[in-house]
Structure formats: C-alpha cells, structure tokens
Amino acid sequence: MRTAFFLGLTIMTLTFVVQAVKSQPPSKEYQLLYEDNFAATKINESDWNYRLGPRTGVGIDGLNLKENVYLADSALHIAIKQEMIKGKLENTGGGIISKHQFGYGYYETLSKPFMAGRGIHSAFWQAGGSVPNNRIFEIDSYEIDSKSPMGCNNLYVHNAPLPFKEVPWPCRANVPFSFREDGWFLDAYEYTPEGVVFYDNGKVVAKAEWNELTAAQVVWLTALNGVGKVDADKLPGETVFKYFRYYAKPYPGINLLPNGNFEYNYDNVSANQPIAWQIKETEPSVLIKNTDAKKDRYFLRISNNSKKFETTLYQNLEYILNDTYDLSAWIRCSAGQKIAEIVVSDIGGKNEILSLPVSTQWTKFSLTGIKVENHQATISVYLKADKDQWLEVDDLQFYKPTASGKRKSELKPTVFTGEPMWQIAQKEPIEFTGDDKFYFFSRNVGFGDAMTLDLTIKPTIMANMSPIARMPLDGKSGWAIQLLENGDIAFSIGSISDHQNVVASKVYQAGKEVKVTCTFNRGEACIYVNNQLVIKKSDIKYDTKDGTAAGRMGTVGAGYQAVGEVTVKSEEVNGTEKSLAGKTKNYRGSISNLKVFNSVVKMNELPQRK
Image (cartoon, rainbow, N blue to C red; front, side):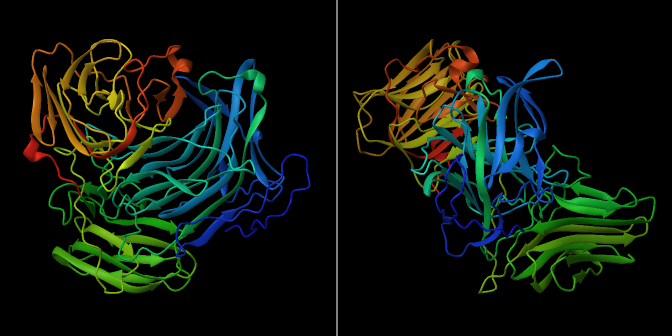
C-alpha cells in the first residue's frame, strides 16, 4: 500500500498548481485502503504494469508505449504524440494498469484529460484481472474524447449464456462534464452490491443497476491516441492523473468472493477453468457442471477417473477490510480422500481450515470468526485423492456476518430467456434536462422480427422530442418513439431517412406520468397507453432487424456514435450528420421502468416495477 499521502503542497514549478484536495467518499463508513499520489521519481512497478502495444479497430489506430508514461511534479503524465517508429507515423499514447485487484468500494481520481484537439481518448476504468481468466465486467468511471466535453460512465458485463455471450450494455451514460475552478476534474465511482454510482466533481451523474455482480479486478489509467480524426497540430500533449484512491466499507451479509457459485462461465468459457479462480493440479480434475446444482445452475466438481491427483482451486482477495468474516459452502464429498478441505490463508494470523467429511447429499458447512488482519485473504479448495474419488462444491461464500446472524435474502439468478434484453431506471427515474446527456444501448436490443418496448415517461414540456430510438441513418429497418408537440406519440419503424409512423393521438401532457408500450410483430405495430390499446396498424413494410446502429435514450440526434466501447463524434466515423426527426429538441423529463424485449410480450405478462 502506498503511504505517501497528498498534503496539498504547492508544486514549485511553472507546469501547474494544485490546490489542497479532499477525497469525497459518499459515506463515513469508507476507509482508505490504497492510495498512489505519484510523488516518486518513477512508476512503482510493484503496483503497476504499463499498457503496451497497438489499439486498433473501426475508427481507432493507436500505439501505447512505456516511454510515454512518467512521473513529474507529483503526478502521473501520459504523453500523446505523433512520431515515426520503424518508418511508420504512429499515434502514440499509453497508461498504467494496477497489479492489484479491487472489489466493492469507492474509487477516485483527480485528473486533467487532454482536451486541446481531437483524437485522444482518456479513461479511468476497471476491467479484467492481474491473474488469467478474470474478465467479469468493465466499469468506466470516465471515458473522455478530447475536445468533447462529454464523459462516458459505463458498466459492461462480459459473462452471459449463449447465444448472447455478453450482456447488452447495462449502462452507457454520456454526460456533459466540466473542470473545477482549479482546472482539475474530480471523478469517482462507487461499486456496490446494488450496482454502480458515478460521480463528477462530487455530484451523482449516473447509476447502473445490477445486483451482486461480484468481482475483484484491476484499475486502468490510460490515454489512447488515434481515436477518430487526430488533430496532429495540437500534439504533443498529455493527460495527467494527480492520484488514485480506493476506499472500502463493510457489507454485512454480502459475499465478497467472485464466482463462488460457479455461475459466471455459462457456456462461453471452458468448463475446466472457472472464471476468477486459479488452479494448481497434478492431473486434469476441475469441471464446472450444469446438472443437479444446489443453487442456480452450475457447481464445481473435482475428480479424475483414471489417476490419483492433487488439486488446489484458489482466489486471493486484496484490499478488504480488517474484520471478522464467515465462510460457508454446500458440499458433496465421496469417501476415502486423503485430504478434502477449504482453507482461508494469508490473513495475518494462522490459517483457518474446514475439513470436509463424506457427504453424498448436498450439505452446508461453515467456518466462523475468521479474523483478517492484513487486508487480504486467500480462499482455497484443496483435494488430494485417488482416482474415482470426488468433491463437489456450490455457493461458496466469504462474508462479514450480520448483527442478527442472518444472511441477506437470497437473490434469484438472472434468467435471460423471457426477461428484457435491456432494462434501466427500475429503482428510480432518470432525469433529462434538455442538455446533451444520453444513454447508448446495444445493437441487439429491440432487434429482429418482433420486439416490445415498455417505459414510463414524464415530459416536462410539450415538444418534438424522441426519448428513445435505435435507428440507422438509412435503410428500412430500425425503431424510435417520438413525442410531438401536440401531445401525439409516434412509434416509428425504419431508418432516420425512411420510416413509417404509427401515431397515438393526444396521449401525453407536460408534467404528467404516462406508461407507453409499443410492440412490433412481423409487420404489425401497436401502441398501448397506460396498458390500454390505442392504435394497431398492419402491413408495415419496414422492420426492426437493423443490427448496425446502437440505440440512444434521452438525446437521440446523431452527434455521437458507439465504436466498440468508445464514443466518437459521428462525422469522424462516417463524415455525415443527420437528425432523427428534423428540428427535434433534446428530451426534457424523466424516463423510468424501461424494458426492451426481442419478442412480443402480452400486457399481462410484462414484469412489474420492482
């Protein structure tokens, strides 16, 4: 842990002056567990790796170099250049990636993203692991494209059953931001068992809802070059980070162990390599099975049918609070093993060991009163056995006990079949004030021969506005909801330049909440208002099969496009701009309880507000 705390000293250089800065965790329960103020003369390579190599793709062409990253003036500098390397003109940038993994908590940086010219993509984010096979989610506290005062606050979930492979973006909020009076940008996110809360300069700007997405992953501080058109005359430049801080607080009754129920692999990752777990084995013996689990769908089996074997499956949790924890697991275990146990080690004191007896039926076993004294713990499942002997484990949990001794009520697993492809604003409305704030959503949302869109809106004005759309520029495929200033609501099928409207007349008013449901089913479109059918139209020659355009909620003009996980100005990708519906205003009002299905859902089958 870095202990060189920033004391607010004036830097005696002409480069910049930094005023005293106080962290702003949202709760007094938070404790600072890690901090790097970049006050040394070189990067601490015990804590950080360099981001290296090319970053290419549609609209992206950059190269990350170690030489572009250095410490000076008590700050991390990432240089951005255009330079000749081996006879090729390269857009160079770079960054650092933590060697440590962090879980639930509050993450904060103070930075100066490069903004002088186009083409630079600065980011503070969390994804992947310092160990193999640990890609669970990505949280982007901010992604900022230079010369564009928009910060992207994102949550991507990378594990899902086939055929989806990746959960449609739960949250991809694009929010206008500004620098503080001292010229710096204070950015933070709070990753909790309920989801992610994003902060700009101490103010909540977006929320991503997701229950118990448990992971421990690394942090990235980066500046990519070559994202869209590059203004070479503005280079060289730099993105600067003053510090990175991580805080943790207690979560009684919440499991801190990623993939302890062995659900994360689904059918996308080898069943012999559980996500987030590391393996030491003398013979192949680890398998994730999807039949007869104790909880949800999957469980761990350790066995070998031909040879004796010795296997350890383990995870190390870093930067957790020093506290007292419990461990529990559901076990089935054959007879005869030499050793079958679950071990909690590296806790600052003696190891805690749960020896596992024979159990042919699922049986719950526990360890209580585990004292963590050095902010870490390694949880291991260990089996030494002869051939045909086995151990099965499900719902392995490591948690701070509650005062009552009771666990948080069990949450049902996410079921993708029959559930919305995308949903947002379930717990509270998202407010739009008419500025450029908007949310992207994935290209496979509201896609195919049939779809259902269900949401509640409360516009604050009567105007030509489009709360939500997924429309390409051209063609005959796509969809949108448009509000007209006379109180009509139009369900548009097709593209921006060529579409057909199905119109419900005089169905919304300023300042009043209204529930709108639109369905499309192979040429037939319906609009329901407050659960009542208002209009049905058949023989529509357009469809919703377009898979090229990302969706937009809030502001739906074509000012920005989603290029992979990067947001780029539209004209820098395709050289053109088109408005969705002529002279439309940015949406003003709230959107809540939004759900989009890739099927037609009957009104009485729609999930109700949580």
